Amino acid sequence: MLRNLILLLAGIAFILAYKPELRVRLYARESWISSVFLSENSTRGLESIHLRLKNRHNVEYFGNISIGTPKQNFTVIFDTGSSNTWFPSSHCPKSNLACQMHRRYDSSRSSSYIPDGRNFTLWYGAGNVHGYLSQDTVHFAGAKLQGLIFGETLIQQNFEFHSVTFDGLVGLSLGVLAWKNSTPFLKLLCSQNLVEKCIFSVYLQQASANESKGGEIIFGGFDESRFKGNLHFVPITNSNYWKLKISEVFVNSKKISGETDALLDTGTTQILMPQKTYDNLLKLLPFEMEGGNYILSCQSKIMPEVKLVIGGKSFYLTPDDYLVEANYGKRNGCITNFAPIKQNFWVLGDIFLWRYYTVFDATAKRIGLAEAVIDTN
Ligand SMILES: *[C@@H]1O[C@H](CO)[C@@H](O)[C@H](O)[C@H]1NC(C)=O
Ligand SMILES: *[C@@H]1O[C@H](CO)[C@@H](O)[C@H](O)[C@H]1NC(C)=O
Ligand SMILES: *[C@@H]1O[C@H](CO)[C@@H](O)[C@H](O)[C@H]1NC(C)=O
Ligand SMILES: *[C@@H]1O[C@H](CO)[C@@H](O)[C@H](O)[C@H]1NC(C)=O
Ligand SMILES: *[C@@H]1O[C@H](CO)[C@@H](O)[C@H](O)[C@H]1NC(C)=O
Image (cartoon, rainbow, N blue to C red; front, side, top):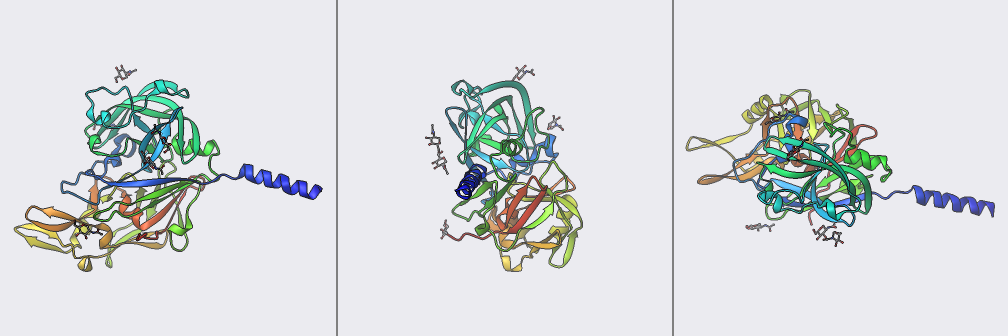
């Protein structure tokens, strides 16, 4: 009898302690902008890169989230490169078409709204986002996250916000330049014990020419069916960023970079690297000359693999990963989804995340990587 009771109590304790993983389905859509959110200068000090060519491999990945009571629905980008969260405000001026074209948060319709009112501006290389802070409950994947301080945006300047599908942005970084007296999304989620482990994992499917698939972000766990072999964990190099150390980079057998930091950034499509490294890389890619222009071949057979050595393990990017068809006026050719930045670190964007399933572990301050299973359905 006593034994049964103990078993029963243990069972109840288990049920109470058990927290499901929170799975958020991600949708993908082609985008004309390559890396809008790369470049919050106050946060990351980066410059924005705009590809002038039509680039079908620019993709935005977004998921559903709701705010307030009753719920107001939005689509958001989950950005591992920044810490702050924002949504368009119902108070944005009528003259702001970009804002009017998206869903807007209306605090007067939410019983769980708590005013804050501080102004904020977030600077991105391609423009800025300005508004004021508010606090409310966020619902996603069946979880209820209370008291998130987020930005209600009144103005989104210059970064082609009208052309993007998503309404807002959720910053999943570790607190890099988070607003004062506010707890960023991930930290808040973990502090309210809504997940068993303070981790999340990212799975992004590569967008094909005609179809953009999507992906999944799991808070509190990861999905072993999405990757091959074991996760390879490496420590993060800065407690505020999802940055790891690359020890060397090779193109064929030629070394183009020694030790460097790299930011894992879901909010960027491309792979960015310091100008000098980029110059080294370009020298090793075969070009064709046409009418005085250098044109990159789309024949992946003749293009090299790029090898990144991370924590003693090699991670490859193949021409199929980095080549993008482009129109050079009269003829077609390819460009790469590599680009230079005026920084001394790399940014590994979606191109890298297509190939490698990624686990972001906030407790152990480490990042786990494993080759993603390519879903051919
Ligand atoms: C960010 O850039 C804007 C203009 O591009 C500048 O006015 C602002 O001071 C910068 N912020 C920081 C923190 O560097
Ligand atoms: C996300 O929201 C859209 C409507 O905005 C809906 O059609 C879709 O089913 C939602 N997806 C999930 C996974 O809830
Ligand atoms: C918000 O999304 C939820 C879940 O996807 C859905 O059940 C609900 O009807 C949506 N509400 C509105 C106002 O669209
Ligand atoms: C906040 O921004 C608004 C414009 O959006 C401005 O009118 C107001 O003066 C600002 N308040 C403070 C305290 O800076
Ligand atoms: C993609 O579209 C092109 C034409 O736009 C077509 O030739 C090709 O078969 C399509 N591929 C797939 C996988 O649907």
